[in-house]
Length: 172
View 1 (spheres, rainbow, N blue to C red):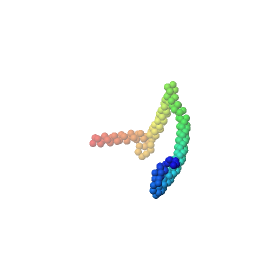
View 2: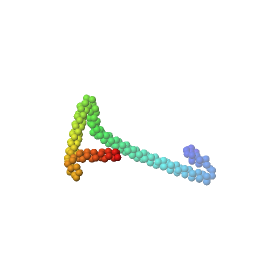
View 3: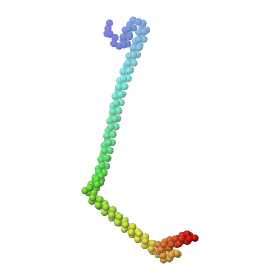
View 4: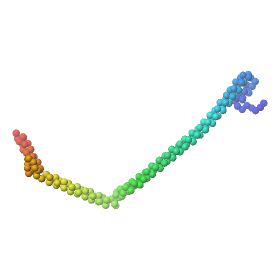
């Protein structure tokens, strides 16, 4: 004897034992091929595990970088939003205060005074403009017809003539 066979290939060799030497040689070749295949499979498994570890580490690094970039982007956004609120908040508070019933009355009265002053100013401008236009119309114009007549007087005489023509046409 010796130690009992541990692998399937060793057990196969013992079974063949004293059998045909050519079958024994074929079995040994088959066992060697199986051992070589097993060795290559172990090397492949080891290389695959190494590559997977390297891949995980590189992806973890990429994900960490992406998360860092996202965090920086959010920080920049928060900073810009904060600066926007710093500028806008006083305006909102001012508008809110103008709606406060205790302060709104005075603001409302002041706004009404401004509107009334603007209306009066506009009315004065319109009166001045109307007066200037009236002065131009009433100035005597020089031309072949209607010497010394004002523009309004000429327009009145035209209107009378056209009415009289209309009356004549209706009579006939």
